[in-house]
Length: 134
Image (cartoon, rainbow, N blue to C red; front, side, top):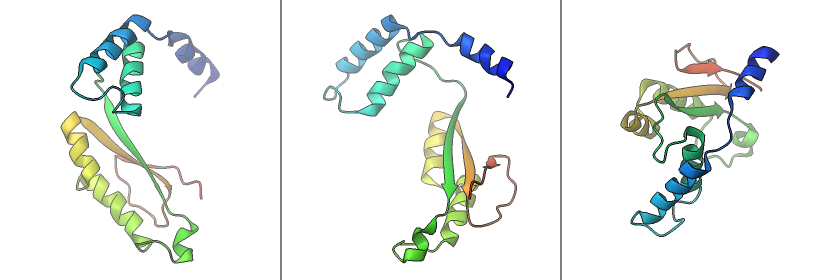
């Protein structure tokens, strides 16, 4: 990414639309639930209204990004599962067989897995991004 490209992107970022946020907040407060009971999700939906300028924002290109990696905890003998399970879980995500895939299909999102350091050489897949840091 070039500096000029980043500068252009940053110039396109506008201030939050306070009116849309107020409408979204009022809508949240009218829903059948205790005020604030959705916690961070409510805050995010209100902020998305401010970003998009719409009380009920529509996000057309959605993705659920999961970052996967192994760590030294397995060596301590406290993990419930062997290290090989990490790669198996990644492949399950990529095949569409995990719970997150059900949610993704429900909202029309794609699932992307970032390999941050899985202790296996994962086969190439269109939805797998290799960014091993360890």
